[in-house]
Image (tube, rainbow, N blue to C red; front, side):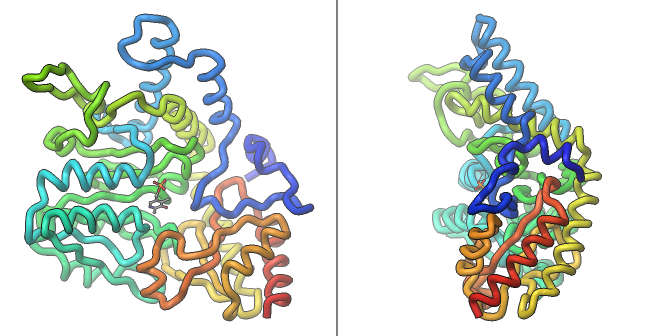
Length: 402
Ligand SMILES: *Cc1c(COP(=O)(O)O)cnc(C)c1O
């Protein structure tokens, strides 16, 4: 990718600790292009207003832009607008399904399956549901490379399985899971499948019809939009069957003390004034990545991943944690027995932003018998020159710390 793309991201052009910023923490949150920043600015400068039911010009404009964003998301993942619910992010999408679907359809003795390498957001809501209902959480084990063991998954499936919830791409190791196969096997026993798409949407094309997933959640801030906005996709007939998540304005058709009727999809799950500029920013971000082209983005990131894998292994004592055959541009690593945090601090002194720790995946770290890793995660605005500079900084830091 070229300078014209980097020029779209003002934040990248700054000096940190005397060095040009190298931002390699994209799996935690991505940076925002001018298209997104300007969409938010325009909203507040030109048409800030509460949406829906407004008779006046600003309200109509805000409603139109917000609903256009929903349409952009729907088209992007091949869903209908009725299936696109604005939520706060992946975490809220999972909690919404665990609550609204789980409370209604999960009973004592039922089983819910997750993998050993899920983000805490894709573990804890299911644990809470299991506790409430007397259901059991089952866990798909992983191998040392960081891949789910598919045969073991098949053994866990039974008529007791009601929900399978798994990430498309692991935030900690970058492993891409065979979600299409996971979904079709779950359907054979009548279970529904939630796909945690938080790391998938920034890197690849996701088509909910092709996957045939029942639910998909993702976060705006990881896909170049603002924070506090995200999407829950659900198949229409499942969303119809669920009870609302929260009660309030917008999600009702009529309210009386004799009883309240709920609004139609997708408003049924959108109680209260929504994150209007967040939704608009997400629409802008989706349009922006589609202008570049996800195929182009994926091909470029594959190139970066191959390059960084090769270059990092030139660092003495460096081992890559997570060597799945199928990986996204996320690389976890350790150098000898140096504490990840110490490496992170020394890299920061060179203007390089990586993340260190358990990456919200403590059960995975337990499985790997480590406390945490250093993680460098890449977006399409990162460059090979940045990788070279990082390798140089890692070599220096390792020398100081060993
Ligand atoms: C970031 C992330 C989450 C949580 O997303 P929030 O935006 O914090 O709600 C869940 N799962 C994965 C795989 C993630 O990367």
